[in-house]
Amino acid sequence: MNLHGKEILLIEDDQHIFSLIEAMLKPYDVNLTFEKDGMKGLEMALFNNYHLILLDIMLPKKDGWEVCRQLKNSGIDTPIIMLTAKVEEADKVLGLEMGADDYVTKPFSPRELIARIKAVLRRFEKTKKVKTETRLQFPKINLEINLKSYDVYVKGSKVMVAPKEFELLSFLASHPNEAFSREDLLDQIWDNNSKQTRTVDEHIKRLRKKLTAAGLKDIPLETVWGIGYKFEIEDEKKNEV
Image (cartoon, rainbow, N blue to C red; front, top):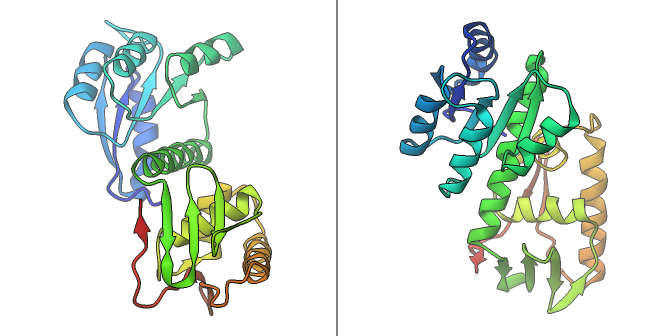
Protein backbone atom coordinates (compact mmCIF):
# COMPACT_ATOMS: atom_id res chain seq x y z
CA MET A 1 0.00 0.00 0.00
CA ASN A 2 1.51 3.31 -1.16
CA LEU A 3 0.69 6.22 1.18
CA HIS A 4 2.11 8.89 -1.13
CA GLY A 5 -0.26 11.86 -1.37
CA LYS A 6 -2.87 10.39 0.98
CA GLU A 7 -4.95 13.00 2.81
CA ILE A 8 -5.20 12.16 6.51
CA LEU A 9 -7.06 14.11 9.19
CA LEU A 10 -5.73 13.82 12.74
CA ILE A 11 -8.16 14.93 15.47
CA GLU A 12 -6.03 15.02 18.61
CA ASP A 13 -5.68 17.59 21.41
CA ASP A 14 -2.18 16.53 22.47
CA GLN A 15 0.46 18.51 20.59
CA HIS A 16 3.11 15.93 21.49
CA ILE A 17 1.09 13.12 19.90
CA PHE A 18 0.52 15.24 16.80
CA SER A 19 4.25 15.94 16.46
CA LEU A 20 5.00 12.25 16.94
CA ILE A 21 2.53 11.14 14.26
CA GLU A 22 3.66 13.91 11.93
CA ALA A 23 7.24 12.63 12.20
CA MET A 24 6.09 9.04 11.63
CA LEU A 25 4.22 9.93 8.44
CA LYS A 26 6.72 12.39 7.00
CA PRO A 27 8.80 9.74 5.15
CA TYR A 28 5.62 8.57 3.39
CA ASP A 29 4.79 12.00 1.90
CA VAL A 30 1.35 12.08 3.52
CA ASN A 31 -0.70 15.28 3.65
CA LEU A 32 -1.62 15.54 7.35
CA THR A 33 -4.25 17.96 8.67
CA PHE A 34 -4.45 18.60 12.42
CA GLU A 35 -7.43 19.66 14.54
CA LYS A 36 -7.34 19.95 18.35
CA ASP A 37 -11.01 19.68 19.34
CA GLY A 38 -13.84 17.39 18.40
CA MET A 39 -16.21 20.08 17.14
CA LYS A 40 -13.76 21.53 14.62
CA GLY A 41 -12.52 18.09 13.70
CA LEU A 42 -16.06 16.98 12.91
CA GLU A 43 -16.57 20.01 10.67
CA MET A 44 -13.31 19.36 8.83
CA ALA A 45 -14.26 15.72 8.26
CA LEU A 46 -17.75 16.61 7.02
CA PHE A 47 -16.72 19.31 4.56
CA ASN A 48 -13.45 17.93 3.20
CA ASN A 49 -12.38 14.72 1.51
CA TYR A 50 -9.87 12.58 3.40
CA HIS A 51 -8.57 9.10 2.78
CA LEU A 52 -8.38 8.38 6.52
CA ILE A 53 -9.24 9.91 9.89
CA LEU A 54 -7.14 9.33 13.03
CA LEU A 55 -9.46 10.13 15.93
CA ASP A 56 -8.58 10.50 19.60
CA ILE A 57 -11.26 9.64 22.16
CA MET A 58 -10.64 12.21 24.89
CA LEU A 59 -11.24 15.52 23.10
CA PRO A 60 -12.52 18.94 24.19
CA LYS A 61 -15.99 20.15 23.11
CA LYS A 62 -16.97 16.81 21.55
CA ASP A 63 -15.42 13.44 22.39
CA GLY A 64 -14.21 10.93 19.84
CA TRP A 65 -17.16 8.59 20.38
CA GLU A 66 -19.61 11.31 19.41
CA VAL A 67 -17.49 12.49 16.47
CA CYS A 68 -17.33 8.93 15.14
CA ARG A 69 -21.06 8.40 15.61
CA GLN A 70 -22.01 11.62 13.83
CA LEU A 71 -19.63 10.97 10.95
CA LYS A 72 -21.02 7.49 10.33
CA ASN A 73 -24.62 8.70 10.69
CA SER A 74 -23.91 11.38 8.07
CA GLY A 75 -23.15 8.67 5.53
CA ILE A 76 -19.43 9.40 5.22
CA ASP A 77 -17.53 6.19 4.56
CA THR A 78 -14.04 7.56 5.27
CA PRO A 79 -12.23 4.93 7.36
CA ILE A 80 -11.55 5.86 11.00
CA ILE A 81 -8.82 4.64 13.32
CA MET A 82 -9.45 5.45 16.99
CA LEU A 83 -6.48 6.53 19.12
CA THR A 84 -7.04 5.57 22.74
CA ALA A 85 -5.17 5.41 26.01
CA LYS A 86 -7.89 3.11 27.33
CA VAL A 87 -7.13 -0.58 27.18
CA GLU A 88 -10.45 -1.96 28.39
CA GLU A 89 -12.05 -4.32 25.88
CA ALA A 90 -15.42 -2.58 26.31
CA ASP A 91 -13.97 0.72 25.07
CA LYS A 92 -12.48 -0.94 22.00
CA VAL A 93 -15.73 -2.73 21.23
CA LEU A 94 -17.70 0.50 21.64
CA GLY A 95 -15.54 2.26 19.06
CA LEU A 96 -15.93 -0.56 16.56
CA GLU A 97 -19.69 -0.70 17.16
CA MET A 98 -19.93 3.02 16.43
CA GLY A 99 -18.33 2.45 13.05
CA ALA A 100 -14.59 2.82 13.66
CA ASP A 101 -12.50 0.60 11.39
CA ASP A 102 -9.67 -0.04 13.84
CA TYR A 103 -8.06 1.25 17.03
CA VAL A 104 -4.53 1.90 18.24
CA THR A 105 -3.73 1.96 21.94
CA LYS A 106 -1.31 4.61 23.21
CA PRO A 107 1.62 4.46 23.42
CA PHE A 108 2.12 2.97 19.96
CA SER A 109 5.17 2.37 17.84
CA PRO A 110 5.66 3.94 14.40
CA ARG A 111 5.69 0.48 12.86
CA GLU A 112 2.35 -0.46 14.41
CA LEU A 113 0.63 2.77 13.40
CA ILE A 114 1.87 2.64 9.81
CA ALA A 115 0.90 -1.03 9.53
CA ARG A 116 -2.62 -0.34 10.78
CA ILE A 117 -3.05 2.68 8.49
CA LYS A 118 -1.99 0.61 5.48
CA ALA A 119 -4.21 -2.31 6.47
CA VAL A 120 -7.30 -0.12 6.96
CA LEU A 121 -6.77 1.72 3.67
CA ARG A 122 -6.21 -1.56 1.87
CA ARG A 123 -9.43 -3.05 3.22
CA PHE A 124 -11.33 0.11 2.34
CA GLU A 125 -10.06 0.13 -1.23
CA LYS A 126 -10.89 -3.55 -1.65
CA THR A 127 -14.41 -2.96 -0.33
CA LYS A 128 -14.88 0.05 -2.58
CA LYS A 129 -13.70 -1.96 -5.57
CA VAL A 130 -16.17 -4.74 -4.88
CA LYS A 131 -18.96 -2.15 -4.70
CA THR A 132 -18.15 -0.89 -8.20
CA GLU A 133 -17.26 -4.20 -9.86
CA THR A 134 -18.54 -7.68 -9.25
CA ARG A 135 -16.81 -9.60 -12.04
CA LEU A 136 -13.63 -9.50 -14.09
CA GLN A 137 -14.09 -11.19 -17.46
CA PHE A 138 -11.41 -12.14 -19.97
CA PRO A 139 -13.31 -13.63 -22.94
CA LYS A 140 -10.28 -14.45 -25.10
CA ILE A 141 -8.93 -16.91 -22.56
CA ASN A 142 -12.34 -17.95 -21.17
CA LEU A 143 -11.58 -16.73 -17.65
CA GLU A 144 -14.04 -15.10 -15.27
CA ILE A 145 -13.38 -13.92 -11.71
CA ASN A 146 -16.38 -13.15 -9.51
CA LEU A 147 -15.21 -10.65 -6.89
CA LYS A 148 -18.38 -10.91 -4.84
CA SER A 149 -18.66 -14.68 -4.49
CA TYR A 150 -14.90 -15.41 -4.55
CA ASP A 151 -15.39 -17.80 -7.48
CA VAL A 152 -13.17 -18.44 -10.50
CA TYR A 153 -14.49 -19.91 -13.75
CA VAL A 154 -12.60 -21.34 -16.72
CA LYS A 155 -14.74 -22.05 -19.79
CA GLY A 156 -17.80 -21.70 -17.57
CA SER A 157 -16.69 -24.33 -15.07
CA LYS A 158 -15.90 -23.41 -11.49
CA VAL A 159 -12.30 -23.79 -10.33
CA MET A 160 -11.73 -24.44 -6.63
CA VAL A 161 -9.16 -22.01 -5.24
CA ALA A 162 -8.18 -21.12 -1.67
CA PRO A 163 -9.06 -17.64 -0.33
CA LYS A 164 -5.51 -16.29 -0.57
CA GLU A 165 -5.10 -17.80 -4.03
CA PHE A 166 -8.26 -15.98 -5.08
CA GLU A 167 -7.10 -12.68 -3.60
CA LEU A 168 -3.75 -12.98 -5.35
CA LEU A 169 -5.32 -13.84 -8.71
CA SER A 170 -8.00 -11.14 -8.50
CA PHE A 171 -5.48 -8.47 -7.46
CA LEU A 172 -3.17 -9.23 -10.38
CA ALA A 173 -6.12 -9.52 -12.79
CA SER A 174 -7.37 -6.11 -11.63
CA HIS A 175 -4.04 -4.63 -12.78
CA PRO A 176 -3.41 -6.35 -16.15
CA ASN A 177 0.13 -6.17 -17.55
CA GLU A 178 1.41 -4.40 -14.43
CA ALA A 179 4.40 -6.03 -12.72
CA PHE A 180 4.48 -6.39 -8.93
CA SER A 181 7.38 -7.49 -6.76
CA ARG A 182 6.93 -10.34 -4.32
CA GLU A 183 7.22 -7.82 -1.49
CA ASP A 184 4.40 -5.74 -3.03
CA LEU A 185 2.20 -8.80 -3.25
CA LEU A 186 2.96 -9.82 0.33
CA ASP A 187 1.96 -6.34 1.43
CA GLN A 188 -1.25 -6.36 -0.61
CA ILE A 189 -2.50 -9.87 0.10
CA TRP A 190 -0.95 -10.88 3.40
CA ASP A 191 -0.52 -7.40 5.02
CA ASN A 192 3.17 -8.32 5.01
CA ASN A 193 2.60 -10.63 7.99
CA SER A 194 4.52 -13.30 6.11
CA LYS A 195 8.21 -12.52 5.81
CA GLN A 196 8.87 -15.22 3.20
CA THR A 197 8.59 -14.15 -0.43
CA ARG A 198 8.43 -17.87 -1.15
CA THR A 199 4.82 -17.67 0.02
CA VAL A 200 3.96 -15.78 -3.16
CA ASP A 201 5.83 -18.27 -5.35
CA GLU A 202 3.96 -21.21 -3.85
CA HIS A 203 0.56 -19.58 -4.36
CA ILE A 204 1.39 -18.69 -7.96
CA LYS A 205 2.53 -22.27 -8.56
CA ARG A 206 -0.73 -23.68 -7.19
CA LEU A 207 -2.84 -21.23 -9.19
CA ARG A 208 -1.05 -22.13 -12.42
CA LYS A 209 -1.56 -25.83 -11.72
CA LYS A 210 -5.28 -25.42 -10.98
CA LEU A 211 -5.94 -23.18 -14.00
CA THR A 212 -4.06 -25.55 -16.28
CA ALA A 213 -6.00 -28.54 -14.95
CA ALA A 214 -9.23 -26.63 -15.64
CA GLY A 215 -8.28 -26.29 -19.30
CA LEU A 216 -6.84 -22.77 -19.43
CA LYS A 217 -4.19 -22.99 -22.15
CA ASP A 218 -2.59 -19.55 -21.95
CA ILE A 219 -1.95 -19.03 -18.24
CA PRO A 220 -1.77 -15.23 -17.73
CA LEU A 221 0.31 -15.42 -14.53
CA GLU A 222 3.72 -14.49 -15.90
CA THR A 223 7.04 -14.34 -14.08
CA VAL A 224 8.86 -11.03 -14.47
CA TRP A 225 12.48 -11.98 -13.90
CA GLY A 226 14.21 -9.91 -11.26
CA ILE A 227 10.91 -8.32 -10.18
CA GLY A 228 8.01 -10.66 -9.47
CA TYR A 229 4.79 -11.43 -11.33
CA LYS A 230 2.14 -9.90 -13.57
CA PHE A 231 -1.19 -10.84 -15.11
CA GLU A 232 -0.37 -10.63 -18.82
CA ILE A 233 -3.17 -10.23 -21.34
CA GLU A 234 -2.33 -9.15 -24.88
CA ASP A 235 -4.66 -6.87 -26.84
CA GLU A 236 -7.50 -7.30 -24.40
CA LYS A 237 -8.84 -5.11 -21.63
CA LYS A 238 -10.65 -6.73 -18.76
CA ASN A 239 -14.43 -6.43 -18.85
CA GLU A 240 -15.68 -5.07 -15.54
CA VAL A 241 -19.27 -5.84 -14.69
